[in-house]
Length: 366
Image (cartoon, rainbow, N blue to C red; front, top):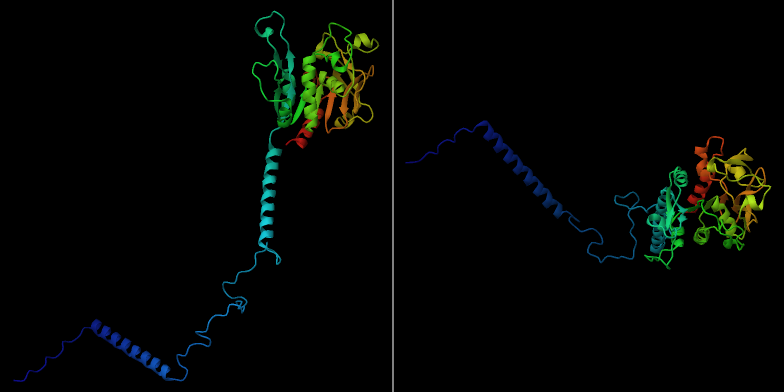
């Protein structure tokens, strides 16, 4: 008995679409294969490009065409005749300039450091307590006067090996190296021995110990090219340092002179005059005479070498200020500028003098 095949069940719409897609893909694949076989049978079909398989010739330059992707242009800092060493040298030089520029900025931005010489209190024989000790100190007003321009002040102690309870290798030249300027403050008389004179009055022996200490200090700062400002005794010491001499007592040796010291201390004052050529004329424009305090019984007698007279007493012509002309700034004034503000507006405002000193310190600092 013959078996009749059963009729296929009717397909759904989705199944019919899938079958049609498979059939279409099969027809496209068949057409692509036929085209490929036809290309292989055609002349030259599938042949490698000319030179394919030949050894590469690296001696023949083959630059990329202009505008081709991946072309590297020469850096702007390179020159056509540059070598690796010239590029290296320019790099090192640029880094060195940057280093020194930054170091210079740090130096110019650093707060100034001004050293002040010490006053010395010598032990009193038989005394106990502090009066039996050597004291080194500074007067408050002089420190505050310098600090008023936002600089730091350091008192410089005496140094030495002999007789020290705690020996040290520190020298005054080390202070001159690390500080930016020196202020020699007032105080005890300069000893006549220091300028090779004979002591005329036993009550005015001066302070030989302090003389030696401050003379060395002055020498080291000048050798280091640092500015120096001397006040009262400091002015006299600058004169002596360059071979000048002093009147040991004005009232005794110059009886015709005006009064330069009395019991009123810093309240005593007199006028000074700025002679032609004085740098004080430039510091105080329009001023040829000014009122200053006067607290000194000694004064410059013989002017030291290479010193200029910057001011004289208006009444008697005694020297009131000196300047060493072979250094950027080494000047001494006989009056006490640190007391002027408290003394009243009629006294000379010495801020320009302080600013000139500090300007020189900025220009010469390390």
